[in-house]
Image (cartoon, helix red, strand yellow):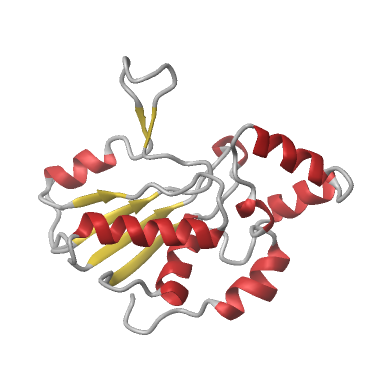
Length: 185
Protein backbone atom coordinates (compact mmCIF):
# COMPACT_ATOMS: atom_id res chain seq x y z
CA UNK A 1 0.00 0.00 0.00
CA UNK A 2 1.36 3.43 -0.92
CA UNK A 3 0.59 6.47 1.17
CA UNK A 4 -0.10 9.59 -0.82
CA UNK A 5 1.48 12.45 1.05
CA UNK A 6 3.39 10.27 3.51
CA UNK A 7 4.98 12.35 6.27
CA UNK A 8 8.47 13.61 5.58
CA UNK A 9 9.35 13.56 9.25
CA UNK A 10 9.69 10.58 11.57
CA UNK A 11 6.68 9.21 13.40
CA UNK A 12 7.14 8.47 17.10
CA UNK A 13 4.92 5.66 18.36
CA UNK A 14 4.21 6.06 22.08
CA UNK A 15 2.45 3.32 24.08
CA UNK A 16 -0.06 3.81 26.85
CA UNK A 17 -0.41 2.65 30.44
CA UNK A 18 0.98 -0.84 31.04
CA UNK A 19 2.29 -0.79 27.47
CA UNK A 20 5.72 -1.82 26.22
CA UNK A 21 7.85 -1.66 23.12
CA UNK A 22 8.62 -5.39 23.14
CA UNK A 23 7.54 -7.91 25.77
CA UNK A 24 9.41 -11.17 26.35
CA UNK A 25 7.23 -13.57 28.30
CA UNK A 26 9.78 -16.39 28.53
CA UNK A 27 13.13 -14.67 28.20
CA UNK A 28 15.02 -13.50 25.16
CA UNK A 29 15.38 -17.04 23.76
CA UNK A 30 11.93 -16.74 22.14
CA UNK A 31 10.58 -13.93 19.98
CA UNK A 32 8.98 -11.08 21.85
CA UNK A 33 5.51 -9.59 21.49
CA UNK A 34 5.61 -6.18 19.83
CA UNK A 35 3.12 -3.54 20.99
CA UNK A 36 3.11 -1.95 17.52
CA UNK A 37 3.05 -5.27 15.63
CA UNK A 38 2.43 -4.71 11.95
CA UNK A 39 2.20 -0.94 12.23
CA UNK A 40 5.95 -0.35 12.38
CA UNK A 41 6.50 -2.59 9.36
CA UNK A 42 3.69 -0.99 7.34
CA UNK A 43 5.00 2.52 7.96
CA UNK A 44 8.65 1.61 7.36
CA UNK A 45 7.65 -0.28 4.22
CA UNK A 46 6.33 3.01 2.87
CA UNK A 47 9.56 4.84 3.56
CA UNK A 48 8.44 6.45 6.83
CA UNK A 49 11.00 6.62 9.61
CA UNK A 50 9.53 5.09 12.76
CA UNK A 51 10.76 5.71 16.30
CA UNK A 52 9.45 3.50 19.09
CA UNK A 53 9.33 5.24 22.45
CA UNK A 54 9.40 3.23 25.65
CA UNK A 55 8.21 4.84 28.86
CA UNK A 56 7.65 3.46 32.38
CA UNK A 57 4.52 1.28 32.09
CA UNK A 58 2.72 2.74 35.12
CA UNK A 59 4.78 5.78 36.10
CA UNK A 60 3.26 9.20 36.62
CA UNK A 61 2.47 11.40 33.65
CA UNK A 62 5.47 13.55 34.58
CA UNK A 63 7.86 10.56 34.69
CA UNK A 64 6.54 9.12 31.45
CA UNK A 65 6.69 12.50 29.70
CA UNK A 66 10.32 13.03 30.74
CA UNK A 67 11.28 9.58 29.40
CA UNK A 68 9.35 10.22 26.18
CA UNK A 69 11.25 13.46 25.63
CA UNK A 70 14.53 11.70 26.35
CA UNK A 71 13.70 8.89 23.89
CA UNK A 72 12.81 11.37 21.15
CA UNK A 73 15.96 13.39 21.82
CA UNK A 74 18.17 10.29 21.61
CA UNK A 75 16.46 8.55 18.70
CA UNK A 76 15.41 11.42 16.41
CA UNK A 77 18.84 12.97 16.14
CA UNK A 78 17.53 16.53 16.26
CA UNK A 79 14.92 15.98 13.52
CA UNK A 80 11.33 17.19 13.88
CA UNK A 81 8.80 14.44 14.62
CA UNK A 82 5.11 13.59 14.57
CA UNK A 83 3.83 11.68 17.61
CA UNK A 84 1.14 9.02 17.48
CA UNK A 85 0.19 8.25 21.07
CA UNK A 86 -1.94 5.18 21.66
CA UNK A 87 -3.60 4.44 24.95
CA UNK A 88 -5.13 1.12 25.71
CA UNK A 89 -5.20 -1.42 28.48
CA UNK A 90 -7.73 -4.12 29.16
CA UNK A 91 -9.14 -3.75 25.67
CA UNK A 92 -11.93 -6.17 26.40
CA UNK A 93 -13.59 -3.61 28.70
CA UNK A 94 -12.56 -0.66 26.53
CA UNK A 95 -10.59 1.22 29.13
CA UNK A 96 -8.50 4.07 27.78
CA UNK A 97 -5.32 5.32 29.39
CA UNK A 98 -2.52 7.76 29.20
CA UNK A 99 0.08 7.95 26.39
CA UNK A 100 -1.57 11.00 24.85
CA UNK A 101 -1.43 12.70 28.25
CA UNK A 102 2.31 12.02 28.53
CA UNK A 103 2.84 13.53 25.09
CA UNK A 104 0.72 16.59 25.87
CA UNK A 105 2.63 17.15 29.11
CA UNK A 106 6.00 16.78 27.38
CA UNK A 107 5.03 19.21 24.61
CA UNK A 108 3.25 21.80 26.79
CA UNK A 109 5.09 21.70 30.10
CA UNK A 110 8.54 20.16 29.67
CA UNK A 111 9.34 21.61 26.24
CA UNK A 112 12.57 19.60 25.99
CA UNK A 113 15.37 21.30 24.08
CA UNK A 114 16.30 19.74 20.75
CA UNK A 115 12.88 18.07 20.45
CA UNK A 116 10.58 19.59 17.84
CA UNK A 117 7.09 18.11 17.68
CA UNK A 118 5.16 18.99 14.53
CA UNK A 119 1.97 17.12 15.39
CA UNK A 120 0.38 14.99 18.07
CA UNK A 121 -2.25 12.39 17.23
CA UNK A 122 -3.85 10.71 20.23
CA UNK A 123 -5.88 7.52 20.05
CA UNK A 124 -8.20 6.69 22.96
CA UNK A 125 -6.53 9.05 25.44
CA UNK A 126 -8.63 10.14 28.43
CA UNK A 127 -8.18 13.90 28.01
CA UNK A 128 -11.18 14.48 30.30
CA UNK A 129 -10.39 11.61 32.66
CA UNK A 130 -11.61 8.05 32.82
CA UNK A 131 -14.95 6.99 34.26
CA UNK A 132 -13.40 3.53 34.74
CA UNK A 133 -10.62 5.00 36.89
CA UNK A 134 -13.26 6.79 38.98
CA UNK A 135 -15.21 3.55 39.32
CA UNK A 136 -12.13 1.58 40.40
CA UNK A 137 -11.08 4.17 42.99
CA UNK A 138 -14.64 4.20 44.37
CA UNK A 139 -14.76 0.38 44.51
CA UNK A 140 -11.34 0.04 46.12
CA UNK A 141 -11.97 2.80 48.65
CA UNK A 142 -9.42 5.02 50.37
CA UNK A 143 -8.87 2.58 53.23
CA UNK A 144 -7.66 -0.25 50.92
CA UNK A 145 -5.76 1.84 48.38
CA UNK A 146 -2.45 2.05 50.33
CA UNK A 147 -2.31 -1.77 50.61
CA UNK A 148 -2.95 -2.19 46.90
CA UNK A 149 -0.28 0.37 46.03
CA UNK A 150 2.16 -1.36 48.37
CA UNK A 151 1.48 -4.72 46.69
CA UNK A 152 1.99 -3.22 43.23
CA UNK A 153 5.21 -1.55 44.34
CA UNK A 154 6.39 -4.88 45.79
CA UNK A 155 5.95 -6.29 42.27
CA UNK A 156 8.11 -3.39 41.03
CA UNK A 157 5.18 -1.54 39.45
CA UNK A 158 5.06 2.20 39.71
CA UNK A 159 1.69 3.58 40.79
CA UNK A 160 1.93 7.25 39.86
CA UNK A 161 -0.31 7.06 36.80
CA UNK A 162 -3.41 5.58 38.37
CA UNK A 163 -4.76 8.52 40.39
CA UNK A 164 -3.91 10.87 37.53
CA UNK A 165 -6.52 9.22 35.34
CA UNK A 166 -9.54 10.29 37.34
CA UNK A 167 -11.95 12.81 35.85
CA UNK A 168 -11.42 15.12 38.79
CA UNK A 169 -7.63 15.19 38.38
CA UNK A 170 -7.84 15.74 34.64
CA UNK A 171 -10.47 18.49 34.83
CA UNK A 172 -9.21 20.35 37.90
CA UNK A 173 -5.45 19.87 37.68
CA UNK A 174 -3.97 18.50 34.46
CA UNK A 175 -6.00 20.25 31.77
CA UNK A 176 -5.84 23.77 33.26
CA UNK A 177 -2.05 23.44 33.63
CA UNK A 178 -1.39 21.74 30.29
CA UNK A 179 -2.69 23.90 27.43
CA UNK A 180 -2.22 23.03 23.78
CA UNK A 181 1.02 24.51 22.47
CA UNK A 182 0.71 26.85 19.54
CA UNK A 183 2.43 25.52 16.46
CA UNK A 184 1.78 21.84 17.22
CA UNK A 185 -1.04 20.40 15.15
